[in-house]
Amino acid sequence: MKSIKLIVQTLFYLVVLALLLSHAVTGGFSHDENQFIAAGQMLAYHGLIPYLNYPYTHMPYAVAFYALTAAVSNYDFLAGRIFTAVVWLLCTLLIVAIFRLISRKLTLLSKDGPSFPQLLWEFIIVGVFLNHPASRFVFGAALNHSLSTLFSLLALWIYIRGIGQKYFSNGAPFYSGICICLAALIRFNYASLIIVLLVLWLAYAFAARSSQYLRILVPHLGGLLMAAIPALGLMALAPNGFYYTNLVYIRLNTVYYQELLYRSNMSLASKITSFFSAVVHTPIDVLLYVVLIYTAIVSLIRFRQAGLYADAAGKSFIDLDKFAVSGFAFVLLLTAFAPTPTLAQYFFAPLPFLLIILAILGYELLELNWGAYALTLLTVIFALTTSTKIPNPLEQIILLSKPSQWTPIQVHDFAESLKQYATSGRILTLIPMVPLEAGYDIYPVLTNGPFSWRTSLLLTPQRRAKYDVVSPNELPQILAQTPPDAVLTGFEIPNAGFERNDEPDGLEMPLINYASEHGYKPIVFAPPFVEYELTLWVKPH
Image (cartoon, rainbow, N blue to C red; front, side, top):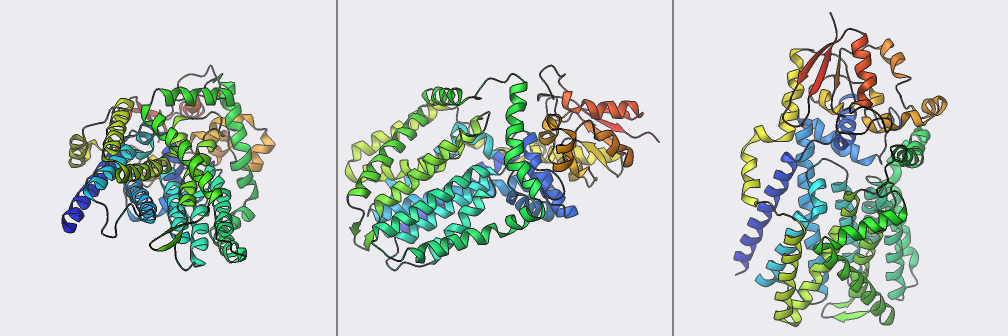
């Protein structure tokens, strides 16, 4: 029986990996990915570092991971997407590992592993993770969500495992500190979890009635510091770059949307209203947030009243475990309201932790009452299917056998096709990951793509120089010194320009004007990975 369950689980997670790979290779083309893919390419190919060599708008650590993927393959974009899919599989396994760990402390899970009814519940939870509306965007793009989720889940797993050990070790605070710092330096909103995890370690020390707080705090702070050393070094070398990323650009982006008369999710009231409106129309979210509120309140009350519970293995902090998961979920939910405007994908962050809470509840109901368990299982399935249209998994997996339909392959083929018109040299574009894919040079100041560029005119010339930000005003001087061999435009047609009344290609108009004025010949393409035409402007001979 044990071997049969192992086979079933292995087959299931192989299917999960196939579905994640399908999401990754067929996800639509997004200019958001350029921030990570292009930055990784510049590190891998030219040794250029964000903040120090060009302006950047995110925390720096994701760049190192995408530099590795660019270094191991000539298909940079495809390698980045596949890497993201593998990371999401690891996140899925960690979600399962965490709720199994807590369930084992609750004696809901035997040493032989989950029973078949428990496996069914586990598979349903994974199915929600794969098909939740908030998952669709992040699973199909090479962004920094996957890595920050992975390291935050790993920090939580280390914490829960650490406080459940009969003989406490300094290793758990240390390694959890490393992981949570990595998550924060990959995606900024995860920095809030540093405080949460520190409070949780203090709560553990208090509940254990231990006077050795330093035995916990010193290793934990040491882990935080060790993980932060590269970032601290980069901050010392490029203080203006760090300041621009974490303070200046955030404000500029808000002003930019205000200038566009963008009203959605701009004020705190509109953000909250939009969130509740979305939740009300998404039954699976109603269920998840109700369970979160219930678990957080009950676990906190029980922990304050008793603190310690005993099981066959000795003392364990089962209510602190639940409160830790709830704390991660709740704080990440709050951070989703911080950016302005707040976008739908920001509410993905708490989802893995919400699913852990729901999974534990299902295990508890199975132990108490079969009928309640069956009803909950059906409720989750109903809530998910009424919240989103679930694609046919067989059709998704079949797409893996059709590389010509993969977005990264289409991008690679398009990039290589440019060599018919410009065999080598430097290409001017707002999506530099594409020419970098084919071995061209780019302008490092535009590595970040349209994001620093579109807000550049909101800065004074003096501040642009201070932060190494280039605007349409400085571009002619740069191009006069190093003219491009070609100009690639059209990527920003679906997006807003510098101001409200700009044409569809407003952001790229300075590039188009330069090409037209200097006699560059336009060659129009209709690549399959976008729904609009792209133009390569070739330098006259």
